Image (tube, rainbow, N blue to C red; front, side):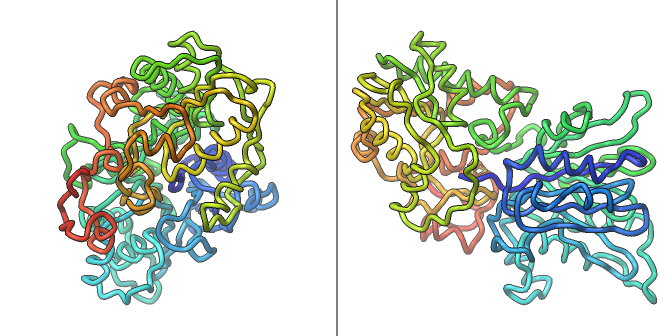
Amino acid sequence: MKEACGVFGVYAPGKGVAQLTFDGIYALQHRGQESAGMAVSDGEAITVVKDMGLVTTVFDERTIACLPGDLAMGHTRYSTTGASEWRNAQPVYRSVGGSGFALGHNGNLTNTDELAEKAGMFPGVVASDSDFVAELLAAEFPASVDGESAPEGALESALKTVLPLLEGAFSFVVLDASHVMGVRDAHGFRPLCLGRLGPADQPEGWVLASETPALDIVGATFVREIEPGELVIIDDSGVRSEQAIATDLTDPHLCIFEFVYFARPDSHLYGKEIHAARRRMGERLAAQAPVEADLVMGVPESGVPAAEGFATATGIPHGQALVKNRYIGRTFITPGQGAREDSVRRKLNPLRENIDGKRIVVVDDTIVRGTTQRAVAKMLREAGAREVHLRISCPPVTWPCFYGIDIPRRDELIAADSTISELEEYLGVDSLAYLSLENLIAAIDAPGAGFCSACLTGSYPAPVPVALSATVSTSTPRHAAPAPA
Ligand code: SF4
C-alpha cells in the first residue's frame, strides 16, 4: 500500500517561501517519492519548478535562491491515476488569459468520466486528476479580453462552482498570484491542516499541509484541521473560510489507514499522536490474540510502534530481528511475486543471534498480497526461529480502494477469499491474528471521529466509479456499496 501525495501551501511575505516549501514537502516525502515540485508567486508572476525524483533531487540551494516570492505551494507525488512521468508531476499550471494558477492534489476523483463527458473533453487528453480539476477550473474563468488578467476573486469563484461537482477523495492546495487556497472533499478522506507562523495576536504567515510534521519543520503552530468540504482562502487580509461543498460535518470519513500506516508517527490527526495510537493498537492486539513467545519484533519500520505496544502489554521482550536497508526507495520494478520476494530480501536482513531457537511474534500493520510477511517468516525460520507468530494491527484488507490508495484488485488481496488457517499455511507461520475493527477504532481513541474503512468492510462511503466497479463485482451498481464477503 502506498501513500498518494503530500500537499503544502504557505502565505508568508518576506519569509523565504521557497525555502519553507522545500522544508514542508521534505517533511511530506513519505507520502510520495515519484516526483516533487513547487509553485512560487511574487504577487504578479507564478514560477513552477518540478521534476521526477525525491525533493532533494529536484531542488538544491541554487534553485531555491532563484525563487523569491510571498506565497508558494508544493507537492510530492505517488501516482494512482496518470502514469509516473514528468508530464504528470505536480503542481500543474494553467494560464488563462493574463492570469495563471497552480494546483497540487492528493486523492482520487471517482466521477471524472462523467464530468469529462459533460465538459466535452476528449478521452485520454487529461492525464491525471490534478490536470482534470485544473481544466474544470480554467473553464470557469471569465473570458480574457486581449490577455487581460482575470478579475480579483476569479479562482475562488471558479472553485466554488467546480468543487460541488467533484466526487471521491481529494485534498488540494491551489494558488494564483496573490492567494493560497486549500480544499478538502466532502468526506475528509485525506488529511489537510492549517498552521500559523508567528504569534496568535500578530500572525506572520499561514501554512496548509497534509500532515502536522510539515508545520513543525517550518516553525508553524498547528491551528486546526480543515473541515470536510471546506475551502480556506489565505491572502494579505488573513484567513477566510467557506463551506464550499455541502456535507454532514458530524459524519467524516478520514482514511483509517492514515492511523494504521500512512501518516508519519509524529503526525497528529483528530488530536491524537499517530505513534501513540499505533502503540495502543499493539496493546489491544496483545489482549485480543495473546501468544507465548520469547521476542516481539515489528516489521521495520511501520510495524514497530504496534510491536512496542504488544511487548508492553504482554511483558515479552521487544527487540530487533530484522535490519532494514535504509537506502531502499521505490526504485524496483516488481512485476511478479518472485521479484517482489527478492525485493523484500534486498530490503530486510535477519539478526541471527536474536532469532536462533526463539519463539518470535512478528507484528506488522497490514497484509495486502502477503509477499512481505511470507518472505519475513521464511527468513526468520532460515535464521533458526523455533516458532513464528504473526499479529496484524488492523483487520484483513479484503476490498480495493477507489479513493487514492493503490490497494490492488480484489483477486490480488490475499485475505479476500482465504481462511485464517489457509493464510497461516501460505505465509508459513504458526499462528496469525488480526486486530478487530472495533479494537482498532478503540485504540485510535478519538471520540466523535469518523473513518473510511471500506477496504476492510466493503462499505464504501462515496460512490464507486462506474469503470472500476467491475473490479469489485461485475454486478456492483454505481452509488451502491458492494456486499461484504
Ligand atoms: S478504502 Fe481503505 S485505503 Fe481507501 S480511503 Fe478507505 S480506508 Fe483508506
